[in-house]
Image (cartoon, rainbow, N blue to C red; front, side, top):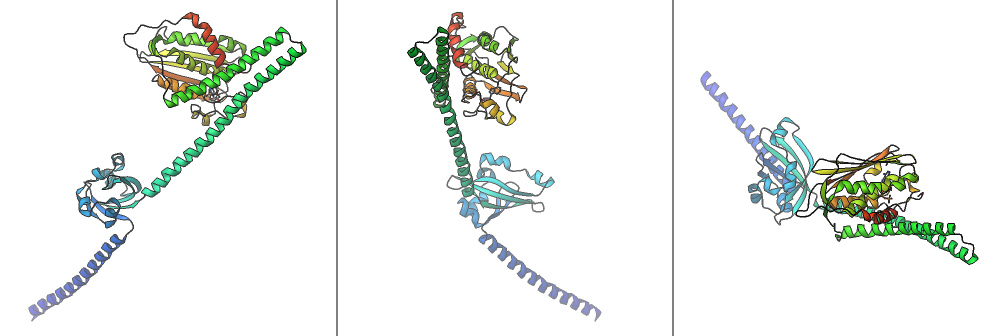
Length: 421
Ligand code: ADP
């Protein structure tokens, strides 16, 4: 009886357990059905990706957004689905194991079946027991497009307002010398009419007219050159030259200008000869621009040091002054085409703000680069580098010292906007 009772108890227990399992199974299949339904109706993309980068599951939203069927998706590796640049954003599994198991809001480009990429905002969670990732995503292509267009629009507005400012600056730049020229001519006219002109006055007026004509010429030259560079019509006349001579000669040619302001001009070099392929006119232009700025923004009794170094591979030229310096937040923009530093203190010496952008383009056309180090009220140092390369089978050009007159003319033009000269 005891044995029979024991067996009956087991049978009853089994029956109970079977019933419980049945109920649990029903519940489970209900939950699974609900989950499947939930996944299918979800507005987001939901899927499971194994650690080798293959989809184990993907809801229908993936197919809707990417165009691939679920079967196709399961056979494509993530490497072939993601944009090559975005592959860098995928973390290795070991990072998930040791770090946070969640990753949210990463933007990836997924390949659509039509060959175009679709931006998805992806969140993922690593499930260690299953060795796979639960992935959810949202199609943000439209948002990205709007964001991109907004950025473009903002950039266009910024450029437009910079252009407007530039044109108003430029008009002012043209107007000032023109007014001075016209004023001087009027005075000359009156004096001639009254027959009261002295030679001294005549010389004065003529020199004012000349200086301001040079200012206009410099402005026009800069504008022409910058637009030629932008449209790709500007060419360098390269020849093999001793760069040390070019830099030294042009530095010495501005001595008269620095003397007017009692500025001490020093030229320093660690080599006497470094032959490289360059366009001497353009290098002079670069130097005259940097020197005229250094003189413009350095007070009386200041100091300007031009130094040249070469390591055989590149030549490094520095123009250093102890003048007004450039505010930190403006350093980044002075090489831009419209990058005039708008400061009341500096504004009184007007300028178009295109000189340095021209300098940068000319240096870059030589394969070089330029940078500036500056501190307000301490001074500025402009450093440019040019690679040492040669034009094969070409002699070294000997610069004609008789070109001094033309150099003086270039100085007159380049320095024409320094008022107190
Ligand atoms: P600009 O014709 O107005 O002088 P640049 O392009 O040559 O134009 O210079 C841009 C701006 O950079 C200048 O307006 C000036 O504020 C600043 N700058 C250039 N060189 C110096 C310098 N040596 N010291 C101080 N500020 C400088």
